[in-house]
Length: 145
Image (cartoon, rainbow, N blue to C red):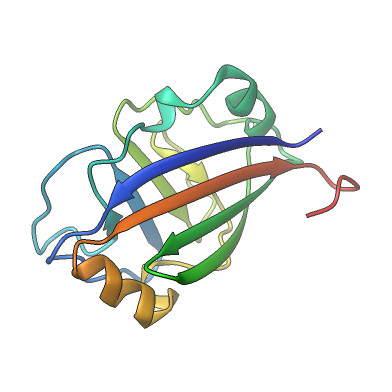
């Protein structure tokens, strides 16, 4: 059975979404121009706030993470992998990575999209400060997408 979570956050005028290898959602309520991977702020949870069932499902080498970003009527779908190395213990941040690097902030590795490749209409809505819903669903091969 798939595990699912929802995260609410919002954009910010400094959402640039130009990072070539990651994107991030944070519970922090501020953003600087250096945060070019951050697409959502003021999230209602970080990795550590995810349910234990979800974290257990994702912390497996065969886990597949399906992420749906929805903001202002624009939707982006991202497919990533989980890892047995994931601790998912960061209190404020969630980071999706193109690489296989894992730390307490990492929620997805080998992601098929990063900040730079997200739809520009989505980025425009986020830069306008609109609300975003992040839907996270973990499956395993054979469970469907």
